[in-house]
Length: 142
Image 1: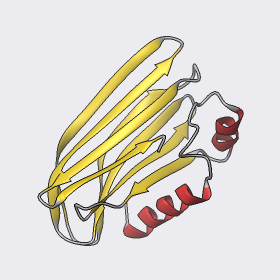
Image 2: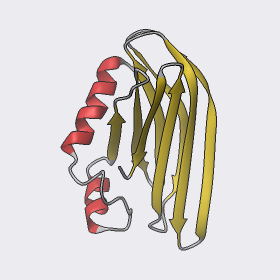
Image 3: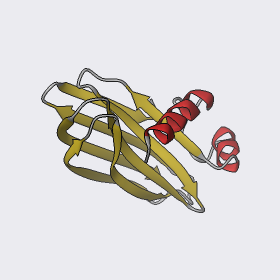
Image 4: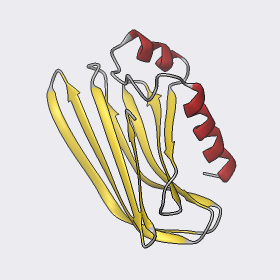
């Protein structure tokens, strides 16, 4: 992912009003968003000098969730992505974590998860990035 695509994703998040508030995939608002090539992103600036972003894309019955980090300076640290899904079949929790190294002006997809949302599940995602300079957090819904 290039820096310009990161900026496009971040800009799209600001343009999709309501994405940060109601994110139940069974609501009329979310169905409208799905029809518009469902894509949503929630960026967060940080004290760590690393931007945090969760991007989503709808693909048929699945929601693809990407955890992304971006930095203007050299950065390394750890991340933790937690996904909670509540649907008619019950509740599930998925955790992905690891370490990363970023070059100046670059962004990196830290983790990717696919969630089955065919039963109109509610999805919550939280990403925490930690470096030696501090921490950054972002989530869906925001």
